[in-house]
Image (cartoon, rainbow, N blue to C red):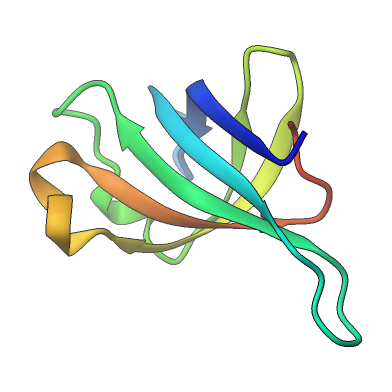
Length: 95
């Protein structure tokens, strides 16, 4: 599968869990590098403290039981009121 859009849970550095929705994609391999994956995470709860997650390397859990590690690159300023984070996957994608 090259894409996943649906529910996910971001496990924050303090151990709290932020449920939300993701839109993930497998990025094609480039010259001399393996494929990678990336996407966006939008927290369901506007009170979730996802702002402190920027810069963190955190687990992202999908409903299929798979977990992937993500680097939270930034808060998406274009949609900051919806608590949307830009993600870069580390290792094998969980989808």
